[in-house]
Length: 237
Length: 237
DNA sequence: TCTTGTTGTAATCGAATGATTACTTATCAG
DNA sequence: CTGATAAGTAATCATTCGATTACAACAAGA
Image (cartoon, rainbow over all chains, first blue to last red; front, side):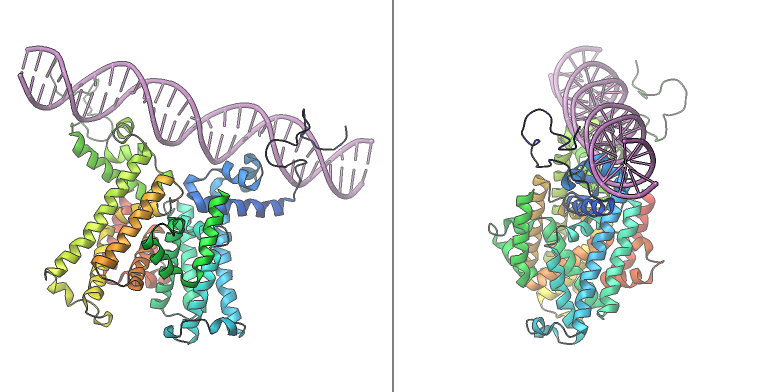
């Protein structure tokens, strides 16, 4: 028997919905990434307890048993997705800091609010805030972290969430050089942003003037980006 | 047959573990409150999807079917608990505002940070922050709200969470008189506090100097209260 | 070509969970 | 006292979900 199209049985229609024809084989390492990416989106949307391994599998275009076998347990999958999101956030901040210190951000510097001061920490704070808002686009990174933050009751997740949060605080304080109060305020703004995203406030942006004011006041220049990302997300689901 | 101790059957031992002897009957309205209180604690700890109606029932000292029958569905129960928490937060803020405007807070006024200004909005902001931190003691009110904020994907919960959050914003802006930016900062500090509670940072207060610094910096005078509440919570579970 | 390891799935299992049903038993008005 | 109503539970059902097992197909090297 030849090796063409393993699943096509009766009719000539190529499978049910998705065009999966020959079911391409993908090396495990690459498949891992794809699953983690899918898992990030699912967990970000529905939380740890609210997500199923089957939803992740579907989102990754793969069978549920494979997801479980590759990661062992749903918890292990969540933890890996969490580490990945955590790493991406740290990287984003470190990129900003490195670029700033290399003098590569001359263009953006002019757009910053001079009222907040132009010493390194104050400027980095604003630049990192921009980088943070940019991450909203990156499907669920921020909400993945947020979901971990409220899953503190799960021992393994809670421990990782605590460590991760402190990592971020230390980065902002030590690498960007913000004093504790400024670092705290920076994190607070981030948590507010996460919350606004979590309750899907951008969804009612046009229908509620209070929502409009709060979003504009919180996101400033990044609002259009976030609105677009929210819209895209809505259609995807 | 007399009406003494309905459940005691064979031995003279009074039931299994809990001393439930005669199983007191409680009017529905009062039972409702007890269940809502229990539900708030459970939902606050484990989130909507992560909680079971049986956990709520156990926490309320009642059977699972009764919980379901009284509220219809788990979702309806969550929504009622959410409304209750939301109402308590609004009340707490309004109490502060009313007391301030009635001149009943002369004592506390002296303890405020004069650097933040002594106009009404600035002082109210500080007083409300204290009231907010006080709510940590009130078993799960704040985390109940937080759990609703990250459950935005559930249509009914998301809608209520959006409206509730905007209510709070409007209260802070219109009734306390904070300008949008100050109201935003106030909410942001609140979301940071919720997050620190969510990841149970107080649990590692003694073991991590970064956690210590961040908690002290965020909670200030209210830290001892929160630490005590966290400790109590840990033992309760 | 054979064979061996990798990629992947179908089938299914057991536990958990929200909900329903049918049934008790206390309480209270008359 | 006596119904009648309200308060409450035991038993159970249908799903859902994470996990396991057994198996299929493909690729690559010998």
